[in-house]
Image (tube, rainbow, N blue to C red):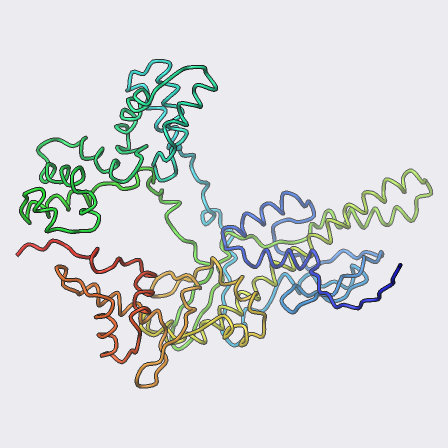
Length: 499
């Protein structure tokens, strides 16, 4: 039996322009620069520079803009003609935002632009270039290529040797055994960096120890410890190690110090000066009772609609009306549609960039207002704050605040902080004062830093010490905070201290 049903539902869909705005909002400064460069390359009507005051009037009406579905999306006044659109409205805006003085850096100096990253040799290329030192035959070279191609980013070979043998047999028809691969592998492990292509941490450390001169202090005990008492070494059972190796505490400490200087991840290269830095998205300065909030746009050019293409569009429109030739009209229509489509795309892109700036400044201003004490006096004055607090203050959705905060950094007088740093849950002290859990983590870190290295503090002891300071925190909470700080358990923090 055929049944007919009627259903009414309410749906909310984002327009392409709104999606574009959301994507731009979550981009950090460097990624935004690349996005703008990409848009400049793909849209001929978009160019760098300030918008000229003189506007080109177009008699033809443009397609009506779709109304924004949410308050965070770019909003544009309804316009039926090119004449009604105020270019200055979305390109220029007031520098005095929401009661805080804001300064936006639009420097276009060539010296301030980011320099391109130099080409770097990959680890695989670096190892391949050194194979000539090993005097390999043709078969050994095939094995070496397979090993180098299987090394992980951290420098370890986690691929079974059987898989390497099977690949060479399948692709080249050469029968090998484990001894052939082991021999080539040991040679590669001696290349720079020493320990590369090791199969586990123990092998990596031993390879580095084997390559040292015999007269290095602590070498003999360090090698014996890894060979004969590796499990006790990882658990820091010092008494058991000394007993098994018949070593004194001073000899054991010397061996431990030597191992700690080894490289546990030989695949991790050094950072270049251009890579090992963070570009802050904001700068906050407190001066003479005022906060100055700067949005970093130093390498982001101002954008405008190309005057030349707008004139072309105006001319095509005028000629189209005068022309009686259908062929010419067809050509002009295609050109006009292309230009008008690119014009609408450029307008929305510029509008989205401007709206992004406004939204980011709103969020940053709200953070500064809530965390005013921190921006005045630094660490130790962080207040509990969640995304909802900022969202309610600026009357925006939590998801919008989350996009602004994610991956963004602020330069303060006390250092560079990720915006996520300012968000944390709160704890109440005995006096009724609410304090950020990040401050509690800092106290835990300080307590552990001052502990006696021979007898590290247990989590229960730390919880008791916090209670004496007015913080009622359970042991499991101390354990959670300690793990979040990346601090090992008490047993693994134990160190050899010579009397």
